Amino acid sequence: MTNDPAEQAILTLVMARGPDKSICPTEAARALAGHPPDEKWRSSLSPIRLAAQRLAKAGKIQILRKGKPVAPEDARGVIRLRLAPESSNE
Image (tube, rainbow, N blue to C red; front, side):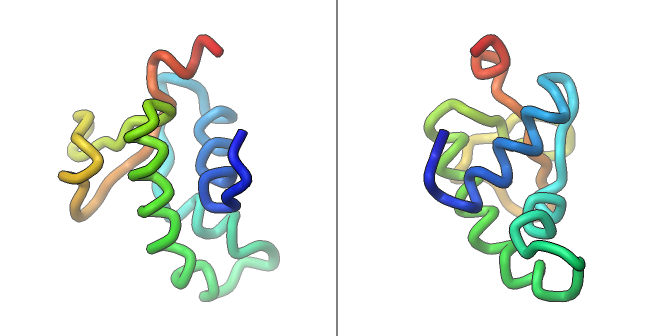
């Protein structure tokens, strides 16, 4: 696993959700911001999106746009994250 807290938050959530389900980046941002949830999670959203790009480039997750995988550099607007098919076997 990674030492980056944003990457850890994403991986923890997508692994818990399973290979056929996805998460919203805001879920990871809220997890990263801690409890109780407040508006601090919004400042975690940019680091989460950057971490998602790194994880996608490493082949650990997929970034989805309109339900279809997209290249990390093409991830714009509303996205979702899921475990990469190869990662679900590890």
